[in-house]
Image (cartoon, rainbow, N blue to C red; front, side, top):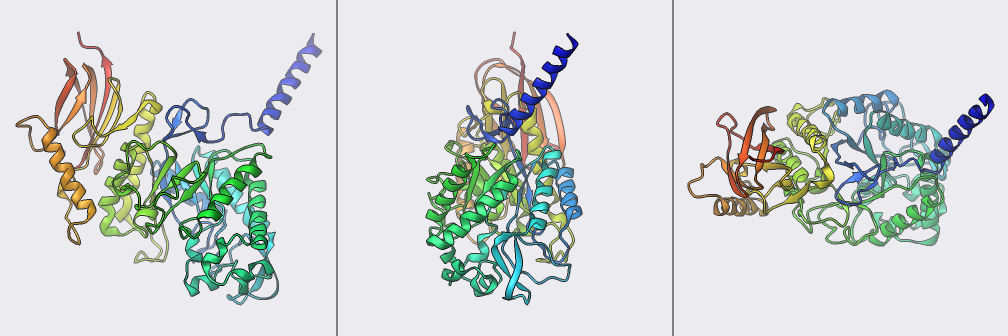
Length: 495
């Protein structure tokens, strides 16, 4: 009897291990079935993601790239409550630096010298030192219960028609020994689909998938801000190629396609990608995006909307975090962290601290909902136009108070939209409602109400009783004089 019991235990352990090998553990990120705005890892619980990303963690600027720098960055993200970052991996810049030379994705075998005075690259030979760092990055992300996207081809900025960047790209012909790259005379030639070049690029894809497929908490990202429409067919091909190749592997991952420079138009939406990270060319993602878009998950990124972050726009970014969250999208801030590209001179700029805090606040609220998958963005529920609603059960409403923002550079589309929203809010409000107020279409019930001021984290809790269905006026507490969030949870039916 004891022997049978031990055999049963061994068989159970074997089957458990086998299920993990086959990717049947249900942990790999996928699109939530009932609310396709969100991620899930178990087909039940919806996952909202928000966080910051920065360039120089795997890609070297002045500081050395090593495991300690990766850990420090992730610890820093966690300190703000972030649960997502973009891994700027497989960047193809060749950059001279004062620090020890960083590992790049390919071995430098020569013969001959690249434009940085060091041996040319062989694009067919992976540099395992670099892959070790990428694997460590993802291992540390998973240990922390965080998520990320992994760039398959780094940043497309290095392939735009700029001679200085072209010469510092490993795929530029003068920097490698691979005859297939001779076709790349200008940056957009990288997307030419020429058979020899495409085969070399597909080899790169397979190497990356082979080494990273084992992890769960990530999505593939084809390339950052590749020129569109020049890269359209090439990106579509790479999305399908990754998907087909991963069918031979234990795990299958979601795939992101991103825009930038207001070039994308409908190319992202029409793509075979599972996730899009749009620019502002088709919809107004600077104000959160359309509330009814559900075809693909949206990762809303300041990098693709505004480009390099500017301190004088930090309040706009902070409010954008809430607008994005209330439209059912995921928020990522382009953080310059400790780079030397700006006036920070290698120091972390505290001017963005409120943006960082607010990203964490949205992660916290997403966890507080009874069921995130049931929260749906609605523009008809609140006069503020920003609400996540599980009707009669839970509401989260954002009052952006955009009227206090100075209008710059004349009447921009953003300022015109703000005026329209302000007029619409007044039109829908009850007569004689106080100036610092808004209305919410409520179902009758008794609600826990929590007022939250995102600028200082101040909270005020009370109880709200709605005796009947209809419009309810919310007068903002006098001690809260900026934008506010109100959270409502039904705690009992009215008598």
